[in-house]
Image (tube, rainbow, N blue to C red; front, side):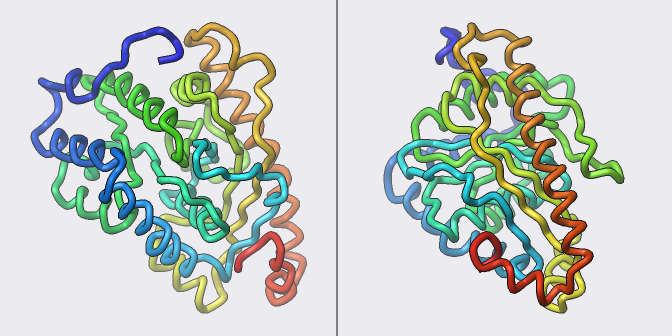
Length: 294
């Protein structure tokens, strides 16, 4: 790794703590990143199926701003997107929008291990819903927190291989407060991934999504749902932070810089949402030709 520390293998570190189901899933999904038919198939399914069903469920409600700030999304270079975290579907909506506009990367979103990795049903949901984009697992149990060090290493390893779209939430967990513009404190793990990956980091602010998928989709088709707003920013300028020696304090600063960029986009989104409330929905839809839903 760039820090000079040895790569911690999640299967080795979790030899005594991972269940057989967890070991199988991690081994299978890790194998899928090796060049070959399985990797190509999953990339194709993420683009052709996953992105399409997500687009279908939100495109009539979605308003997008800031697309002109995005850098070229070269398929060989990995990219990290950092977003606020209000719903389970934030990063899926963002990635679907970009995939429909040419993104060809393999998608990965670290996800809590509970359900998705400790049950057989979670394995099938991950495969059917995201084509195994929900990887690697994050462990919430205190007694297994050490495994997250290996999760960070696994994430960095995949990003540095190239061709990966990594979605992260600097807040670390879902913000369940009533105020979408007051963000939770930044978590240092995101800063470490950014510091050691050395790839472009794109901030985005997302608002209007709920965790009630049925109601969200119904509102998209009957026109009664709230707007789903997505505001992209230019790649985050970290100054000289990425060139400094690795340390927990530095990682926290990098994560905070990411969160500051997201917070600034939140103010743009606040103005956008106010303008949408003042304008008829039909007029709002007609303006989406260049920066909104297709």
